[in-house]
Image (cartoon, rainbow, N blue to C red; front, side, top):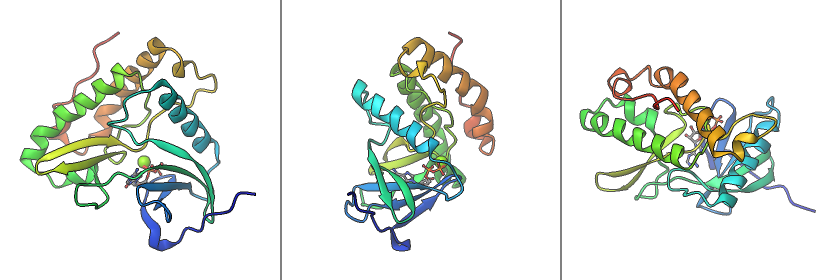
Length: 202
Ligand SMILES: Nc1ncnc2c1ncn2[C@@H]1O[C@H](COP(=O)(O)OP(=O)(O)O)[C@@H](O)[C@H]1O
Ligand SMILES: [Mg+2]
């Protein structure tokens, strides 16, 4: 019989619209995301399945967090992912946090980094549904050296997951999602939004 892992407020990291994120009490490199009590479990399963497929396909996880499995916790079913931390061992802050600082040098650098991230996801045909700046963390690697890591919004909600098997269909999907969504996702940050581009039509 599998045991239930006790989570307590001291492990709490942050809360999104659907989930709460906790530090794994037994593994400092991992976090556990549990759904809010009123949400169905579908989302955890779908995301888990998609990440497992990506891992089997051997994609490069430089801009993603590896998925480590599901677990029963005192707060409900949870999904385990690698925790994103900075070079000083602090939990990395979100892109939204950095953009609200309105730092000129950061803003000048970030649009290119988002474009690189977009290209990486396209090349590896990794489908996403929401790349808003709260779903991307800015991992500090060293002085003036950062990397974007997507922690949420990856995958799709297709019941028949053709986009998980076909590079062509996956790319069509992610191009459509980005081209429809990016202006709205970055609407609060017009200086950066103005430098972002749609994917060329395919
Ligand atoms: N792998 C991670 N490492 C560090 N912090 C994380 C990680 N995943 C999520 N978080 C934090 O928890 C918050 C909520 O997680 P998220 O997966 O975005 O939940 P939701 O599905 O509710 O939006 C994020 O905005 C981020 O601050
Ligand atoms: Mg989120």
